Amino acid sequence: MLTTDEIRSFFPAIQTSPDVILDNAGGSQVPKGVADAIRDYMLENYVQVGADYETSQRSTGTVAKAHEFIDLFMNGVGCGHAILASSTTVQCAVLADCYARAARGGRNEIIVAETAHEANAGPWYRLADRGFVVHTWAFDLESLELHLADLENLLSDRTLLVAFPHVSNVLGNVDDAQAITKAAHGAGARVVIDGVAYAPHRAIDVATLEADWYGYSTYKVFGPHMAAMFGTNEAFEELDGPNHFFIPREEVPYKFEPGGPSHEGCAGLLALWPYLAALAGGAVDGEPDRKSVEKAFDRISVLEDPLLHRMLEYLGTKPDVRIIGPASPSPSRVATVSFVHRSKRSAEIAKAANTAHFGIRYGHFYAYRLCHRLALEGVLHDVEDGVVRVSMLHYNTLDEIDGLIRCFEELL
Image (cartoon, rainbow, N blue to C red; front, side, top):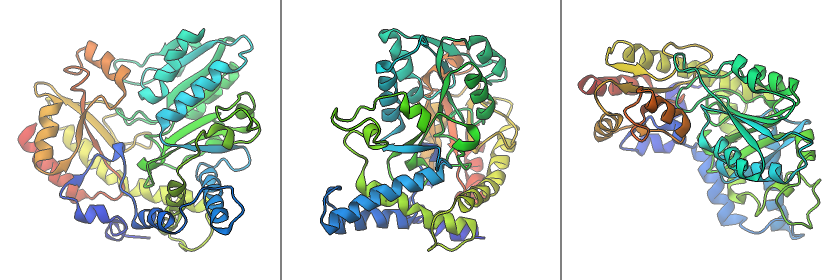
């Protein structure tokens, strides 16, 4: 298995950045091979897809293989397809428009988790202007958790969709997506799962979850600035995609990719495989396989666990600090840690750490409705000040965390 030093050698930016990057939930670093593949594609193969000449055929193959790789990465091979776009925000907006134009069969209610990132909230709330009824699945203010019983009380034979995060990008908790999906399916509804904050830390498994729709941002998982959304064959069949009218609705994912995905980005997505294979301890020149993806993320989890322990343990010793999310490490928590200080504003703390070259952030991180409720209840100073967020990934080190802790000693 690769050591942490060997892992860090894959990421040139870690070696050259003046800052310790602990803002990874906003976007991860990329292995050199990913950047090289994007460059090489643009210099050697930068033509439109779909033509009969050789260079175009290579481009067409790159885009097709990227879709196949993401299907495998999400464990959706055989049960659906991944569509590619510039961001999860765009994909959720496109999906919402598709549902607004689709036959509803008497189902016109949508349930949205209050802990959602706005990407998987706003598009559904906006459908209230198009004849839908949107319900908020509120979180428990004391535990900061979503309770399944509260969802079950909202579900009915009129429920069309349930939208929720697999992991809150503020709270860092892993919701039981399988149980939520089972409850939604029991009521005849489909689910739209935001996996953006989950995907950098755990292997996505849409087959086990039985997820109808599952999206994540590839640029937060060591890849180019793109996003992928998996849909089951059955979910796609119910919708007419937004691409041009003369493209048959059965041509998935093409029908759901207006303008097409970034071709050079697809080359970058494919180049992620050798890094995952190296993490898994396998041959980097072999064909992608699901078992190695799972092994790679098992390794990621092992490497992140001590970082999470150290940060939570330290913050737990500060009486004026409240951790916003689970205060103890567990398998149902990822290495994204948010907190507030009783008297100091989050901006003051984060900016002081930034001056000391620790790349952390403050704010609501687009989980606006979550932070708005916490601000109304007096948990946060205000919604814009939000929380201080330290988001760690497997290439971070205990030395980096200890350095931030020394910085916090003067601030907290």
